[in-house]
Amino acid sequence: MNAPTRRAFLRASGACLALPLLESFGHRAFAAPTPVAAPKRLAFLYVPNGVNVEQWQVKGEGSDYELSPTLATLAPHRKDFTLISGLNHENATPGPDGPGDHSRATAVYLTGTRPKKTGGSDIYNGVSLDQVAARHIGAKTRLPSLELTTDGPRSSGRCDSGYSCAYQYNLSWATPTKPIPAEQNPRAVFERLFGAPGEASAARRELRRSVLDSVLEVARSLDRNLTAADREKLDQYLTSVREVERRVEQAERSAPKLPGFTPPAGIPDSYRDHIRAMFDLMLLAFQGDSTRVCTFMLAHDGSNRAFPEIGVPEAHHQLSHHQGNEAKLAKLAQIDRFYVEQFAWFLSRMKEVREADHSLLDQTMLVYGGCLSDGYKHLHSNLPVIVAGRGGGALKPGRHLVAPDPTPMCNLYSALLHGLDVRQTQFGDSTGALTGV
Image 1 (cartoon, rainbow, N blue to C red):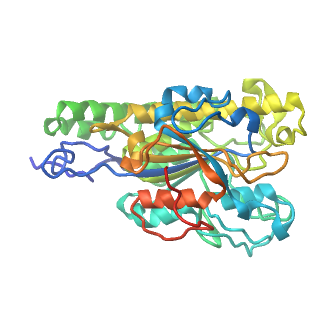
Image 2 (cartoon, rainbow, N blue to C red):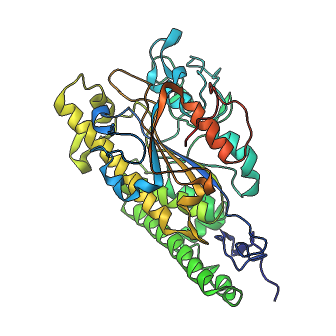
């Protein structure tokens, strides 16, 4: 029997399952004398409404800094990320455009471009960084990029102070006039990654059959060609796919039944579970090399989501306008810690997945942050930024990097593009690639 290729897919009964990196495939991908490097990945995680700045800021620089209360749960991963201070998004500030900081925040975050202020169809923004990266490395995967959110999509209507909702609800822009709507429903993402289109997937859900049922036999037939390490890796991957599907189906079964209302299938009741389901899908997409570029908007800027599961029933956006009130600042810090805890959980998951001698996190450039620092003052300076992973050797984590203030956020983006071997000389309002990352 001929050895399968690295880009082989398991196909049966309308299902399609991309394989993780296995050294047994092709030319022994990671073995001498002609090693093939694992692919680099790029991902952005967006959090809204700014932070409790005092509780976020760390003490010290370099590798000896002291983690702040908000960031304390990241302690087990401090060698895997770099905190960056002093980065700014000048094009998100009011300038001649007046109010609308939340719409500008989301629109500018990955574009570095001031959006045209309009509530009509004549929207105009920049191309987002993820799509610049996808144009260079997206052709190597089935999906050029993957866009996730916990909010429902909106691409029209007026939202914040006369700005189109397209600005406030979309991080990714394929062209200046074409935002890429993100997917909210974990089931829809799962089907996009692993299912067949249309009736085949619907029929399988109706019968409660796993997407793996039709391909497991084919997967087992590969065993004779795999090393012991690859067998363990493939088993881990298939188990992860099964677990994510099980959680999605559980969410479908427990969705509330309200008269005259059909909730979207697959969205968990718990916000924490929703976030983690999306994180697991991102991990599977990277592990199976279905895509190498992903954005995840945990919530749109201006979000008024409440957090009763952590004892904060008040709306996030309203709390961010704290006016220095200590009780509101304390609750804002609780929300900040909640989001950081989910990020820490995802880093643990990324580190569990091995690719040869490295983890999946080692091969990834993962940016966590938002486009507001102080939500009350609507400041777009000294933004909360964490860059995790090593990007296949492009990044050197484990420090607190203090950039000269002001430094354009897009200088970091230029550095990330260079880390992907994309030699684009300028992006957004960058003045050069940030050094020391």
